[in-house]
Length: 290
Length: 246
Image (cartoon, rainbow over all chains, first blue to last red; front, side, top):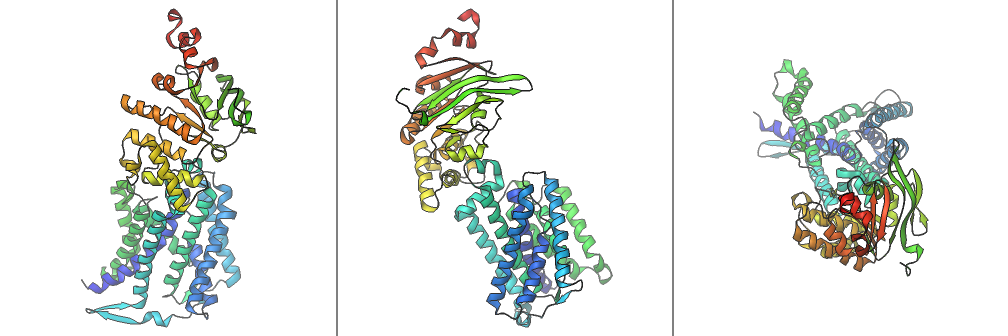
């Protein structure tokens, strides 16, 4: 097997692991599977188009601020009013919100995909021991590692991190010891929004356009990654997302040409097999969380 | 009691809690002054747990009022009541298993408005008071029941409550642990000056540390008095042992 495939698969796995983390964090804190998460990434994509001519630091900062703003708006206007409703109500709310944001983007930017000027500086390639590694893969890997370390430090070492971890375990008890649920949940949406913005930057760096439907595939990957990793587990989410990306890339590389069109079918068959063996997911089944 | 201002008393007035017509608590008046330990006892089914839950907002009142000082807290949510300074513990502790003991207690101090180093110091002090500071860095899932229970109380203590409601803190503890816990509850009261309402089946704890004991049976108050008065009260003896012993 060509080791180059592994390099590419690790790059995709890292990106998918970030996608999954953002979704899993909000689920852990408030039991909400936010299917409008993909639309946050889509909003990030349109922000990049609008800020494309700006210096890179302004593009990154601006995209993060825009996505976090929408993430907070989502929490305040859509999810807070139904926070104490059933999980099904919250789920339907998130679907409705996803549709609303898609149609809003369609009205604002048109039905056709908007072209995105390529980031040529990211396509520069380096050769290490016969392996070709692009700047984009290095950037994705480094960013993912930094986000994971940052998230771990935030959850372990800060007041809001301890409150977040307590809320993921027993949100009712956390409120009883005086922890303000609104603050903790808003913090989860800020972190989730920041991750969605980073995902948008890394994802669209290799794309040529952004469309109103760009978030659809992302939320599906994140959802399935979170489920096979183990719902409620941050470590599981990162692992589940990584495996999704890794296996998908390997399938595309290793399947005979005539079967590659069925790569999705093979991937989701594997997902079903994992869930049949470990219904609670890879990590949650062992009881190891956050 | 005469020296205690009404502002420093947790009180219920004619509190009733009915479940589908069953009178679990029926017109109960209870007073818990700050700086004192009040016991709430009664045979199984007497209504003491229901009253305890009603005072802390976990069960809605059918009638009557609950006051914390001058504040009428009837109908308040448990969270709002806790933020006012009336904090309870649970029989099953409800400790956060995936957090360390120190982090668990830090949550209590954060809940009372402290942050950073101050929150950590307050948590450390509470753990010291409860005698479990050596377990600070242990994951809560890994400690013994007695230590878990102490950590649960430390978490409540770290909120610096005006009134501390302890729900059977000695359940599941051995004799030595129970004796040590009795001393700890007195130390908490002395350190914080808070009022303590203690629901406990273990009469050795109740009679050792309570200044006043409130006895319930079939949802009603049957006696209120000092440990000496309660020990010899015929109604209490009858409630616990039946009419032939009274």
